[in-house]
Image 1: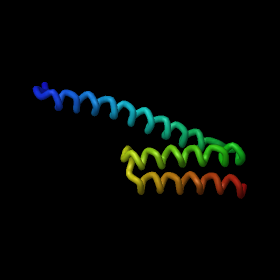
Image 2: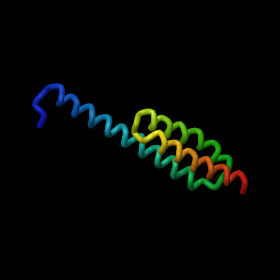
Image 3: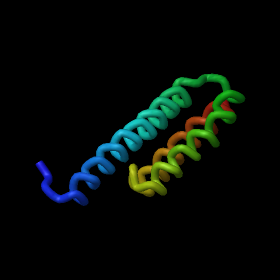
Length: 86
């Protein structure tokens, strides 16, 4: 157990941030799952900007790496474009 007042506060802050990060990351993963499962082109085009925004925010907060966010956005965009062609 921590003895210093500042380290006890740091533990509290870390736990709170960890829970927030887990929530936002899980929400983004679920949104990506919904987008990948979508077969309707119009619905997918409407979802794509929202999911990309979620990924950008996660990368900005260093929850995920910026390159991973870019890779995921690229794959999702390819998926939506493939729906548009079909």
